[in-house]
Image 1 (cartoon, rainbow, N blue to C red):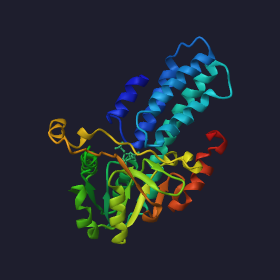
Image 2 (image 1 turned 60 degrees about the horizontal axis):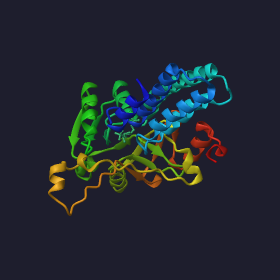
Image 3 (image 1 turned 180 degrees about the vertical axis):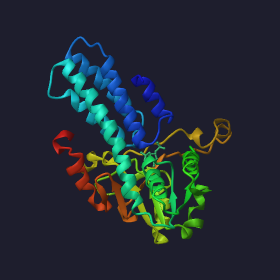
Image 4 (image 1 turned 90 degrees about the vertical axis):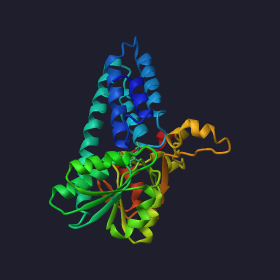
Length: 309
Ligand code: RI2
């Protein structure tokens, strides 16, 4: 797919989910590198950088996106030969996509081992990795049930219940505001992440922090399933994660909004759950307490602080 097409699909959320947008961006860069007929290395690099910037600008919160782009674009370094750079970019993109898929599978295995026979699990939004854990637990023969939220305003819960239904998992579908009413029936909360900061805070779909707060009050454990490329290296130097605010008409139709001149619709797509409300973050490198996020950024993501300057 060409870069502008992928960027448009990510923006419109036709491609969505932090892992999927990261893989789509890597693939778009790979295809772009494959087709460019740049007259020089400098021109090739310039065109790749423009494409990378277009992709990164689509959605500001999911760190998986700039991380994937960063990993792929590093193929441009260490050479001034266009063909070498092209091959490196293509190789890195393919490698990223492969390792991302492997990470999802590994997390499913680790996550499933935290789910006990008979558990009732609550999940919010539609996370490929969180669902992977749930489906793997079911596949391994554990009798489980799931509560899935609706996820206003984009209704990602509809995708979640279809996936759970197709897997044959008994599921209750609830509106977002019903979480507290049902939390005492729940043994475990499992959600995904769009970003994990150095202090172990998890940025995920709006409503996640309410779910986690409710779970903490009810003494229900909260697990976050997140590949290491969802950890945010720049938070090490104090950068904050930007919370995407999407158009108001996702929440209220334009004609109604126009008839209410004193009303402004606010539509943040994500919120921040502090580390204290999270019991474990399950990565492909193993399950860690959120307070160990720094280790993941330094040891596994392997970003050098010098790169931020
Ligand atoms: P996976 C999604 O964002 C949700 O917040 C979900 O929890 C998170 O990405 C991670 O998704 P959106 O694209 O990578 O629906 O686990 O706004 O699939």
